[in-house]
Length: 176
Image (cartoon, rainbow, N blue to C red):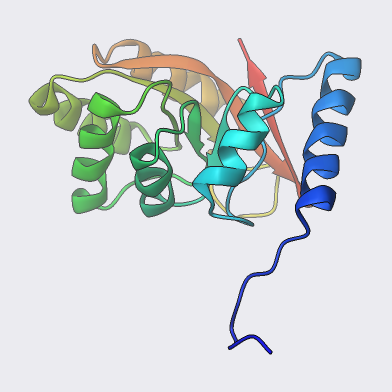
């Protein structure tokens, strides 16, 4: 009887699943940051954070802007932001989004982000995207990661916070 397409959620199942995942992470001593690309919902992201998630992940700058606009904090943008207009949007978002983190995989892009952050009078935590051999995104070697970390360390508006890589369908983030 509903006009499609329509999103229908079983609230009890949603709350059980959010609680189950949060409890699993707590029991394992893992900081949970679920990916919001599946639900793209401020309400669901807030529920996940209220249950114990440290924040959420977004694949794209637009998703991050929408969630931050709804008051969601602790957003990690998991795909490198490199296009000039997107870098400007990232800098503007960094100024207003609490706990924003972005990934980088190239020193030139890091420098462009740093310059945009200077104009926006903002700072940004970044993690390095590592390519584990699937040729998706990321630096391709340990040496390249170290070189990028050193380049980031020289940029005043960026703060290096760790690495991420994709392994199959799972994302791994390591803080250093």
